[in-house]
Length: 238
Length: 238
DNA sequence: GCGTGACCAAATGTCTAAATTGGTCACGCA
DNA sequence: TGCGTGACCAATTTAGACATTTGGTCACGC
Image 1: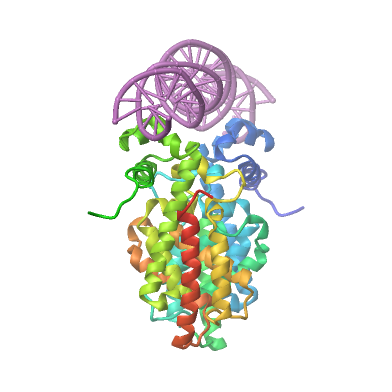
Image 2: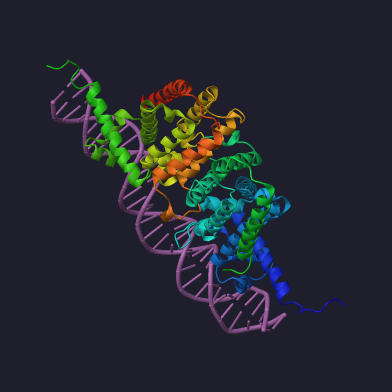
């Protein structure tokens, strides 16, 4: 005699949607957007092809939501890290954490590099902006910089726009891995994450460390931003 | 009554080679490697097609030398800047200068980003390394870091390999321009160069400024490295 | 009434003939 | 005599007609 609920409406439907997304994710990472067919996704999710279209209107919309989901999970994981240790809300540490999360997720990396092999038509949305922009990465970064500035966690001598661009470029550079160092000689992802963190810290954080109360206050706001971004990404399709 | 020299052997031949290279450069930047034909190059240089092959054995070799030439000119321009002002030999300033030179040269940018649209088959040499590696960018960077370290112009608390990777990644990130900031909102190339310079300076240079004598001594060595690299790139084809 | 797979138009892939192109070389002009 | 040339050739690329696949729909049946 468990609690009553409608036998198979919301719950089962949701579970099915997740099975579809899981199949789509696997296939996208393995084959790339163009090679993945709705038929194959349906087969792997053990449902009919038409059923996929009960959830998403087109293939594009399905995969776009998948990317939002993926990006949302990265943000979520970073948020969890901040919850565990407020220091991770500091610019260098936070960017380091983003890198670490992305380095473990092929799709997240593809989003950030705009990898056309994986993303195919998704790499260049109709708007002309990059996928990362489409997913609100720029907005989130801008908000974060605002919070950091208001708490003195980044230098005030440099305009916010410059700091945004700096963090963006440095992160992108580390994720793509540069161009000079041969692949074989590169360090481990964790070590590269440390280098990235140090670079961002040196570039935008003030020389004097801030007191813990400030960090806690800022961390709360950072966490709020991350959580809001995550929710916006993971929930409904726009 | 000018000085005597053999009427039309070395000189005229050299001038012709430069006309060919100039035509090849224009066409490569405008059309990309695959679309450029030897016929068109010959037409623009106002010579016969076979003549091109008196200078270079294959299309690949011709364009490879073109890229070496282009990269050599960037290095040369940077060297000139160092000659005019020794301070430009400092890590942050030097990288800033490289960026400025590259931002004015489409081909140099293509080399650094590995742009397959422009470079075509040249983007991935048989060795599997990137074009930039092929042109000795990694070697040059490593030597520069060595010189900087020996003069205390970069921190000693971080391994040289880490500094090389950091500079490489940051430079690459700024040249590609990041992924979050919309194209339209981006700052001018010169301003971005400043941001890059500041980032590299903050990431690898020691906090206390060094005395001028040290800078002069280091600048001489940096200049020697640049000049040697430039000579190796501009002269004979390997 | 929800899920399905046959169905359709559009996109993609395949195959082959025609055209282009990298590279060579016998010739002619200086 | 020898440097420069463009006709020439093999090999690759392109074009386009045809076959296949795929995104998306919908009438049917469980």
